[in-house]
Every structure is written in C-alpha cells, then in structure tokens.
Image (cartoon, rainbow, N blue to C red; front, side, top):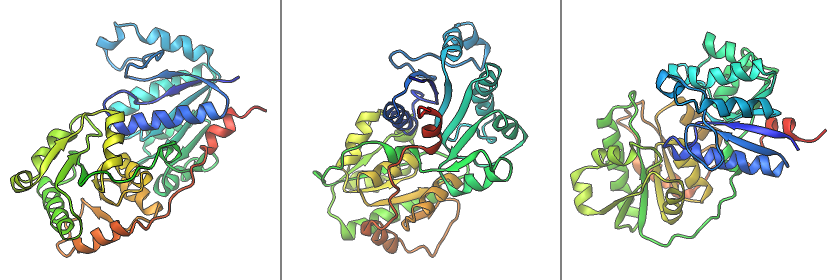
Length: 336
C-alpha cells in the first residue's frame, strides 16, 4: 500500500479548502492508499507544515513533518490555488515543501490546482513537481506555456465529493460574500441589492442566510447588506464551519455566492446559483461548466439585466462535470 503525505491549506478557516481536503481523502481511500495529513490546522493524527517564520520555527512542530516526508512514497498537494504570485507568502509556505520533497527524492504531484499567473518563482517550483492537474482552462493554458508534458486538465476536486442532494425545507436564500481588494464594495452592494429586488418578484422567501465560507465572510456580508434588507428579512449567519455550511446550503432555495466553493457546493446540491466572479479563477471555472448566471464584479455594467440573470439561475442550465477520480492522483497511486 502506497503512503501519501497529503499537503494543503486545511483547517485555516476556509471551508472551501476543507472541502478539497475531504475530496482528496475520499479519492486516496478509493485508490487503496494510506495517508498522513500535513496542514496548518489541527486534525486528528495530522502534522504541521514547515515554518514560515521564527515564531513557528521554535515550536518545533515541523520535525514531525520531516519524519513523515521521509516515510511517504508520494507527496500530494490537494487542491486550491496554492502557488499564487500575488500572495508572496504562499510561494514560501508551499514552495519550501516542494523543495524539501525534491531533496528527499519523493514523487510530488499537485492536484486540482489553479494559477493566476506563472512568474519565475512559480516556474522554478513547478520544475520540481512531477505532475500537476489544473481545474480550469485558463490555468491549463498558463501551465502549457512552460510545462505541457506535466499538466492535465481535470475538474475541481469538490465535484468528486459524495454529498447528498436535499429538498428545499425552508423559505431561505443563501448569500456568500467575501472582501477582495480589487472589488469595489459599493459596486458589490448594488449588485446584491438589485438581485434581491428581482428575487422578490419570483421567489417567496422571508429569511436570508449568510453562508460563511471564510473567517471574515459574516462580518463583511453584514456591512454589504443594506439596512433596508436587514429590516425587511430575518438575517442569520452561519459559523465558519464545514458541516454547518453544507447543512445550510442544502436548505437554501436559491444561492448568491462570491467564493468559488460556495458556488460549486450550491450547484452540487442542485440549487439555483448566481455566481459573483471576483477573479479569473471563478470566472474561468464557471465558464468551463457553462453557467450563464455569472456577474463579473470587476466590471461595473450599468446595463446588466438582473431579471435575466435570476431567470438563468432558476433554469439551472449548466454542464455538470463528471465526478471522476483526479487523473494525476490515479496515475501515481494505482498499483503497478
């Protein structure tokens, strides 16, 4: 039985990352392999990741990581946009693990990844990776410019999750919002309010559930929702918790989502979705599944037909990806 060191930004307060972890674990089990989890969060039997600063260095939790690195057969980075040139710390945090795996001569793969750009550092790090599966066509194009022999196009790992589809049991709509420095908050407020006005004409609802998929989501959504909306509807807030987020999405009759995995979760649970695209990652992935009810938050479109966006969402017309095993993961873990 092959042993995997599964690495990711798990347990760090992002529900989407934790969904990627669950999917990675499910797929590793399906392929008959064993695993040890290496992540910033605290899960049972998990180990920490190498330090990115002096404070974490002197906690010495990284020692256990290197013990597991030595024991494993394959290092798997499970899902996300881990190597992001716009976030320099991400290159240090995950790059040092790639370098360490290379020094230990371990097979190293990245699965279900996305990339916003490829700079010299990312190119250097990918040169030490054996294979990388990317979850959107934009990322595939970027990787193919440098390492076409290493890249495989797959679906986001969350599509593989075994998750029950439930019937609507409440008059509740779900809203997920997140702060992003390149999105104007006044523009976002206008978009959300206009969508709610259109929804009032076609759906009966009396409650808004703020779906927290990140640490700051609840507080930020409270700022974006107008006082008029708060007076008109009961507004509830989920905790930043994986199980609670899934439970509440399953009860919503309509979802407006900014975070990628809040949107994918809504689609998996067969909910009408308006996706608010704040980055190329979201726009590309929703385009790949041919979702029409997407609003580009980086573009102030005064002529946007909100009624049509809501109509398209209610039609639920999109190309649902097949829940297949990640091709790269299957290749490295299948018994020869």
